[in-house]
Amino acid sequence: MSLKIPHHDINLEPTMAKAPDFNRKSERMQTERSFKSEIIAAIPLTAQEKLFHLRICDQAERENFSFLPGQFVMLELPGCGEIAISISGSSSNHEFLELCVREVGTVTGLLHRLEAGAFVGIRGPFGTHFPMRKMKGHNILLIAGGLGIAPLRSPIYWANEHRTDYEDITILYGARDPGQILFDYQFDEWRKIYDLKLLTIVEHPDEDWNGHVGMITDLFDDVPVDPDNTFAIVCGPPVMFKFVCSYLSDLGLPRQRMFVSLERRMHCGMGKCCRCNVGSTFTCLDGPVFDYWTVMNLQEAI
Image (cartoon, rainbow, N blue to C red; front, side):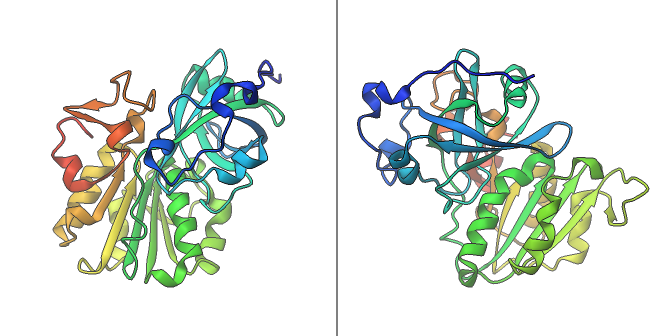
């Protein structure tokens, strides 16, 4: 059954009078301004995840909206609530935003019932980003577990669009079972067109699986890592950070060149609800992207 959100013309609100300059932090961290957006596609990926394509309705706002890989938006269902979701698409795509959403609660459950043509609100973008420009001239190692592949799509697109800026690009992706692997329809494209190496692994294979079996760190046996010339980005369950980053650290990769995302702690997106508070750090304001050296020194961060 289709669920329709009541119509609200957000363009009539005073804060919508001018298009924002997203190159200024004060504008990027705009907390009250919401962009009316239309769901133009809701693509099932697994039994729990859907990929939503959202198109900002106003053309000027759509063209001015920009983000960097690793940033997130607050997705609002008027009258129901809002959730923080990392942007999963290309930062050069000004036609629509891609958000991969897992159904885990009330808001995400309602969102999964929406179909193309429904309207939602978007605030943002918020947060820090993966330092893709700093990685120029180096190898990039992208490591994802489960839903962690969703925020990694943005740096994957960025690396492809600036392919000559980087040397070897390697993706390691692990899932609990083959049915939970996301975006597998893009894997061949990434390997052949994006000129990168992609290895996948599952913990519990089915009878049709003929790939690697085990933990994601087992893939390092097939991937040589040059610690002096590599940056790493790690996204996935927090328990994975310790095992993967410790393994990379033992190989000699500096912790300051490993980057993780603490998106799981996001709630209000503006440091008001304190649910993302870790010590004196608000991960929605100071993150969600941190280098691992910072994270390992934040008690209860992961």
